[in-house]
Figure 1 (tube, rainbow, N blue to C red):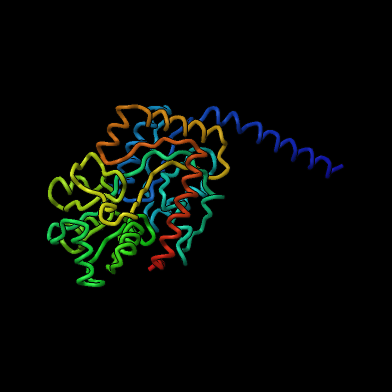
Figure 2: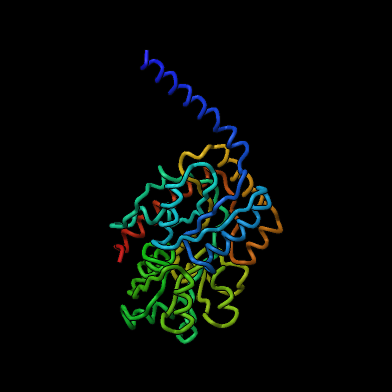
Length: 325
């Protein structure tokens, strides 16, 4: 009799919990939402995260607050979101690195399985990425960089936002295809690396246009070539690396994700709001002017992109024999 009562009570609790989920999802959001970004203030991720947070605050009727949790090329942020309550009030500012490169880096201590612990929602935008050098270097073209590296094997330095991050991988693909050796100097995010390049202590970096554009315009660094095809209209006349190394192409993107187990209705609402935002011409034109390429895809499309990018960069990591430093 007692066991039957416990069983009945358990079934009733389960019924009430399941029954409450659609209602809570329907009322979402009823309080501020936290958007967790794994990269430091001033970088390409942070710039876009704050722009999206501002627009989503208006669209959702609740404040969206950016929470920067830096370290481990974004994985500290990803782990914190994976451990959060799946109620829609903790959103991950998703980067390609979190789901495509860190999980396949040999020896990398990743404490989550992004396929099981996180829920992809939408890719907001890709980035215009490029190779740029310090103003004190003599390099003006891709071939100049290749020739300089061949003349000084292992001497030229390039910065990155961390081992195994996208900036590191773009450089690894470049050195592999060009058959050259350069010294990697990782930092905790893009802005600290940029500061060292502007100061002349690091030779170059592969990074995104959004965070480096002001330094290009004021002469702090020199743009060499874009990693993507076609080049960005923001810097007319700057070529692509593929014009020198035909097999070279390196893209990156930013998006939103949620903890696994979040009600699908919340993910669908968030996806719809971002796609509506990206479809707005004024907003998309602003993104382009800042060095981003608007996407706004569906949840299945984002999942497919994750699998495709993971397979691509796994091959690059294996070919370059990369390991955490």
